[in-house]
Length: 268
Image 1 (cartoon, rainbow, N blue to C red):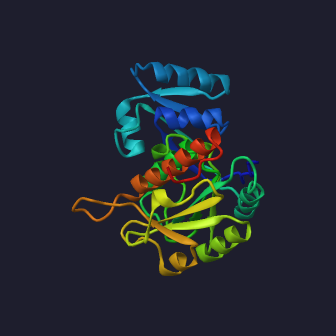
Image 2: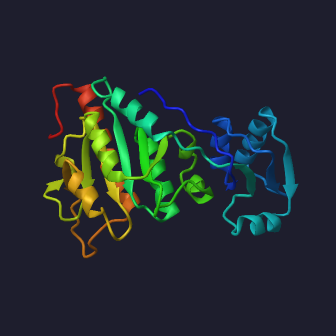
């Protein structure tokens, strides 16, 4: 699928952790400088320093306690930087890019998130989506987590590569996806269809609901179908990022199998 352009961000945030900074540098989202904890000894840090210097980024060293204070915790792996916040992709451009891929050798796969409020869940979903080959993610502008330093860290660098767009109305978005010939499939605990019985080889958009509330009623009603993940234990539901991983990798499994055996459909 042709990549849609990102709008540059003028906001800055604190990015910490070796992997997120490595991926930011590889994607040429360059900080003014990188601060590393004094005495830190790690092969990955050496790789980060070499990459930063190749991009012309100054390296400074500071006591680990100072980095702890600025980051607000000690889970920074001894490295941090002030850097431009990840840029969002224009929603209309992403819609058009996804729509243009319908009917191609690799049918598009999009993710729509209905009110994910925990930035760690959002970051985990983005990480899994990027690994599973998702073409783009749509999130609401209001009452939902946006791209911040926690999301960037938890995504392990996925925010650098995955097109992410914000929209004002998910019901309108679903209609627009349908107009571009994507099947829109929501998730619900009481859905009549198991997630593995859906044919994910088709152009599809997966809609995942927020923590606790699930899909909003109007969003659910606009979906073409609803699927569930069977749960056999006493707890009634899975964490939304875990649910996303299960469904996305079922989609990847079906698509990979269909490529190696074109006569095979979703069901075994």
